[in-house]
Image (tube, rainbow, N blue to C red; front, side, top):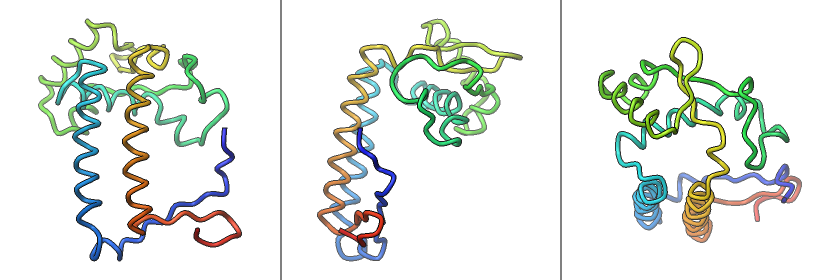
Length: 169
């Protein structure tokens, strides 16, 4: 593992005026490729994928806000006391979807054993999602795409890397 505590990325927004088109293309293309990757690896499309991603983010949001505790790294299931839940109403509000659509999608995801139901009907993703083989393949594909996008933006001067104490690279 790399000690990244001294690396800072700076976005040079003023450079988008002169070299923004290739970055805009790459980012839009990356978004579509990532959406396709989720669909291929998890079998989820459009609204069902968005609902599931909101549930995943809500599940780990508390941990992310507190930094990266050591037990958060890796793929072992998280202690349920450390995770968060979200309501169907919260999902509908976040995605601007009709509540009935969210109820239907949540029922489908639950029927496929992707969800855990918590107190008062609150929802989290099922423990062990990180251990599934399709998750690892998906993460590797997503990371490759993000790295390629970052590499292009670094080459274009849209992102600069700084190591603490040395100035921009």
